[in-house]
Image (tube, helix red, strand yellow):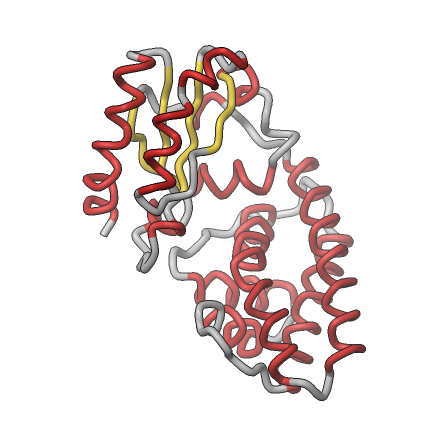
Length: 239
């Protein structure tokens, strides 16, 4: 799967080759890099690391970016090499996720050049889990008797929760599985949450029109609460 995706991206990257030469690197990350099934091109994620991110340079890249959009892909994210090297504290969850699985498409592997401080990862997880918990409680209060509404909320939360669960496992020094189902189950077992409920939400993440049974959403809510409590109690040196 990953090789097929890389082959499909190569003609698009050739546009950047012509414009940038060796003055950039490209990394595939996310589900495609982990070898998970990817059904839509919009689920393919690429990061570009550029020597020059000036407005003039970005304007010159405009036609190449439009080619990505016409092909059905999200435009790549952009960071300068300096920003990438200092991004561990700004994007600790995202960097941890990229470090766990990525595929270098152009240039040298940049991942070894950025480190994530466990204290920064813990703080980001605490913030994102707490803010998610507030939103999910609000949704439960509003829609506890409306499975269709609960399904909308749960589907939107599925992918971000998998990334957060990967971060929780990394914070604890645990091996991070590849399949999303295994990730959330392992995290729930670690934190004392409800594995079946959070796994059901993740499994339904791509099912349009899915109606979330109230008991499943309640279990999902409890799993997020347990993860938030776990991270709140942890210290960066805990393993």
